[in-house]
Length: 119
Image 1 (cartoon, one colour):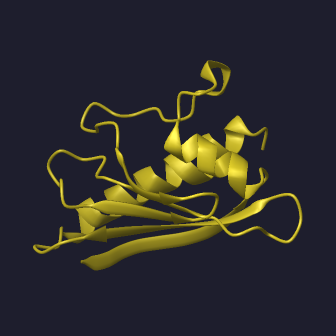
Image 2 (cartoon, rainbow, N blue to C red):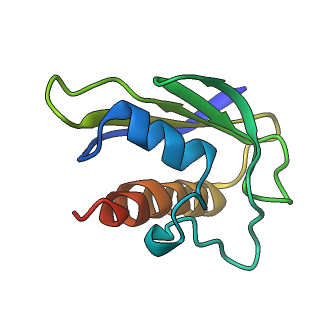
């Protein structure tokens, strides 16, 4: 697999809370954050180690080989230094598609999920 995107950003919630959000996105209906587009599907959890690792299946039916890995180390305080890594098999997508996939992951995780915790 080829890594086509990765980003680390602090999340305000602790690792165990982020882990729960990633493994069960619908657990709190008042904090809905996994809002998918028409060309996306709900991911499955392929691997998890509480509270510091979650691996999702692809969000995109046209790229079922894509994998999203979430590393969830503590930031040393009350938050999480979440890193997402997007990997994909050959053939690699063109630059436009790669940009779109990265942007969507970033929006879901570093915007929607982050806002669901009040930031």
